[in-house]
Every structure is written in C-alpha cells, then in structure tokens.
Image (cartoon, rainbow, N blue to C red; front, side, top):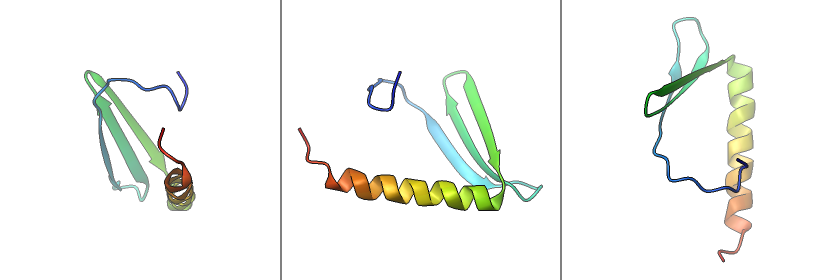
Amino acid sequence: MGINDERDVEANMQIGPTELGMVRLFVSAGNTEIPMDFDPEEAEEIAEEIRAAAAAARAVKPR
C-alpha cells in the first residue's frame, strides 16, 4: 500500500499533549489503535510537512 492507493477504511485521529510534555497523534481504526508520541520540535516539523503537502495538493489538477 502506498500513499496514492485508496482504501475504504474509516479511521479517527486525535491530537493533543500528553502528561509527559509530548505531542500524541492517536489513530484508531476498528480494533487497531496506534499512539504516536513526538517531542514538541518533532511535532512542529510534522506540522510543517503537513502544511507543505496541503500546498502541493492545492496545485494538483483533479483528474
């Protein structure tokens, strides 16, 4: 499965701070739960990557 492969799967994502000063991305789909913790600097880098991907996606012409 790659980034351009579409799937008909529903998932939920929560983002927030933990008690230990980390940023947690928590993804759940069906019986699967994936907690991912990042230090604040890593979280800011991820946010920048998401912004860059959003800008690139705006430039793509729909098929």
